[in-house]
Amino acid sequence: ARTLECGPIVNLNQGATQTFNFNVTVTATNAASLRNVATVTSPGDPVDPNNEDDIEVPVESIDVGLVKSVDRTRASVGNTLTYTLAVTNNGSAPNSAAVITDSLPAGVTFVASASGCTAAGSTVTCNVGALAVSQTKTFTFTVTVNPSVAPGTRLLNTASVTTPGDRDPTNNEDDAETEVVTEPVESIDVGLV
Image (cartoon, rainbow, N blue to C red; front, side, top):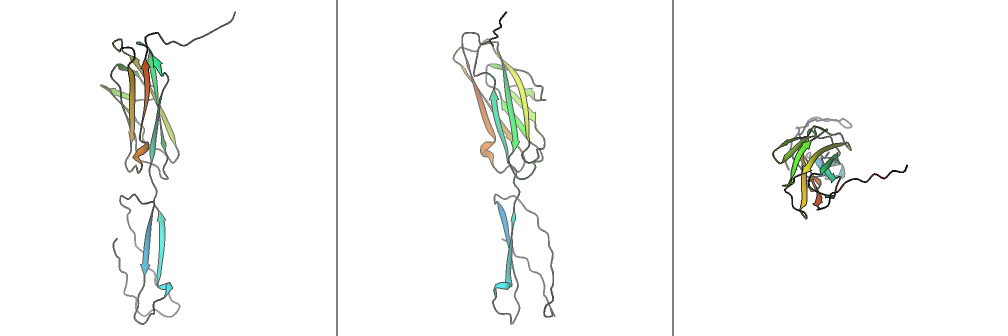
């Protein structure tokens, strides 16, 4: 805590008021609110409850969270997997920028992203940008299961989201898993003529 002194206050008549204004900048803090206490003292003034006052100011928080899913929990070699990543600002203030980083598991190859995600090696990056409070942005991209993947392999894909000032990292990461099986996994379309 730091102490700021204002004054001296001289020749303050009965019933008169002297006002002081000052500005502060909130630095990094994990507190939900900030409490500021002011005290006035003067020779001859007895200790009195009206010599002190305080104010509590809520601190706005940035908290982005990530939810990841895959369209197939079982797949065979050659199948296409579609990953969906949803980022939500759960905080009480908008964030300035957010980025998703997705680490592809061995055994899959990046195909495309209609949402603008890009791949460099086994790392997929999605630029989320700014999010308003409670806003969600969704990104998708596709991969194929490589022919060399052995049946029984579990393809665990993990992604994380980062943004400056995020106060809750516990919801920044999520994963999705697909098991590779021997038999082809295709969609079924039954029709009647």
